[in-house]
Amino acid sequence: MSTHSYDPRTIALLAELIHPPLELQAARVQEIHNELYKGSEFQYQNFSVGPEGIALSNPVENPGAVSMVNFLPDRIQLREEMTGTHVDDFRRRLEHVLRTAIEKLSLPILVARQYVVRSLISPRHYADSREFLGTGVCRLQNEQLQDFERPVGLFGFKMIFPVAEGENDYHTLRVESFNQDPRNVFLEDIATFTQPVMPAELEELGGEMMATYEFLKDKALSFLARFDRNPEAGGFELD
Image (tube, rainbow, N blue to C red):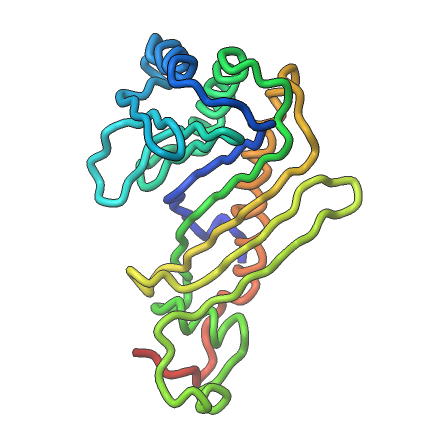
């Protein structure tokens, strides 16, 4: 099965960019807010100072949704969760916000970066993702889970991919049934990049974000598609 058979729905995009510690000044972050506000595409409506950092955020309509950039003494965090933001738009926002922040905060280097992509897919041949992951992918049957003496409410697994030769990214992939709707499979890729980036190399950040997204969309979905076939009889007990 081709991964094109799936229609992945991205529900969260996050980026955390670590820099040398600095004394975080509200006035300088306010300058970032003002600069971003000049353009409608990447602006944030709200500015707030908290005990741990300074946040720029946008009002959201969906419960649990987040649209913000958070400034901490040693890192900058961008979050778009449940807002429907496309990865291409997030990449451009990331590059624009960081370009502005590096200038206003006089950041000399980005030490490391971590990106998170979370998506949902619906298996083609299974009505329940727990059965798909448990029976279809992991080949487990009822008798193999009898020691627990209770049904399976959520099923999943985690895979860690260390840095490969010629690469500088480290991936942690989580695949599990979606607790809010077991018809869907939840996927999360956390990619860590440890090669320092200089201010003149900011275009690399967008590439790193896309590499994280493509690792999930291409590699993880290709892996799952191998098992998404008509299920054989049997399986493990569900709620």
